[in-house]
Amino acid sequence: MSIVIPCFNDGAHLGEAVASAFAQDHDDYEVIVADDGSVDTVTLEALDEAKQHGARVLRCQHAGVSSARNAAIGAATGEYILPLDADDRLATTYVRQASSVLDTDPDVGIVGAGTEFFGSGTGEMHPAPPAPAAWLVANQLPVSAMFRRDDWVRCGGYDEDLRWGEDWHLWVKIVALGRTVRLLSTVGLYYRRRPGQVTENVPWDVQESTRARILQAGLPIINRFPNDASRILAAQLNQLQAVRQRPSERLRTAALRVLGR
Image 1 (cartoon, rainbow, N blue to C red):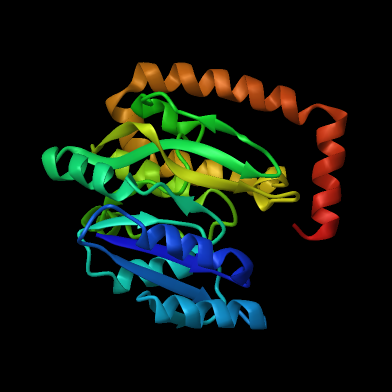
Image 2: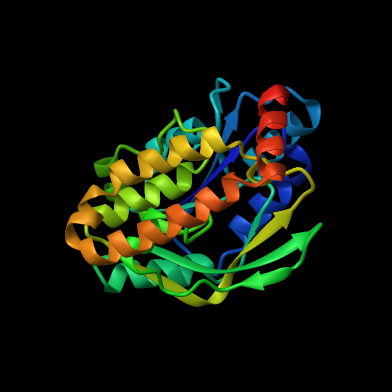
C-alpha cells in the first residue's frame, strides 16, 4: 500500500500530512512525497524532514499536481494507492479500513470515506453511495480515496493536461472499467479549507473542457446505463445553462480569464 503526497511550495503544511500518513494503524505501507519543483526554503526544509522521517522524496520538475501524482504512483511498490494533498491529513484508521475492503472484494475499484473540514471552514461530509451514471455530472469523492494501482495503469493515470477535475476524471475512468465504489461510514480525510482555493474559482471554459473529457471517458457507463445517464445528463444540462445565464456568473468568468486563472 502506498500513500502518495504531491507538494508544490506548501512546506508550511507538509509536515502535518506526512505525520498523519505515518500515524496509520496499519503495518504494511510506504509514504512517497513527490516534490513538484518547489523553490521556497520552508518547503525544501520540510521535504528534507519528510525524508528523515522515512518518506521517499521524489524531486520532479514543476509540471502540475497530476504529473507529480503520476510520478509518485509510478515509483510506488504498493498494490493499492491512497493520494493525499500536502495540506490535508488522514484519519489513523483510513489505510487499514480501505485496504481491507479492496482485499475482500475484487470488484471494488475505489474506496472513499467521510470528510471533516478544518481551517477557514468546518463541518463534515459523508457522501451517499453513487450510482454509476452520477459520476458523469459531478465528482462524488475527494482526491483522497483508495484505488488499485493496476487500474491506474489500465486507465493511463491522471490526465496531466486537465487544469481542473483531474481526480474526477480518474474516478470516471475506473468506474468505466466496471469497478464498483465502496464508502466507509467513518471519516477518513481531514480537508483543509483555505480562502481563495483554486477549486472555488474555476472559469466556465475550464469546467466545460473537463466535463467534455468526463463524458468521453464515461461512454462505457452511458452504454451500460442509458436510461439513468440520459435522465441525469438532461437535468444537469438544464441546471448548468441556468447558472451560466446569470449576469454575476458571466462577470466572474470574464474576470477570471483576465486574471489568467
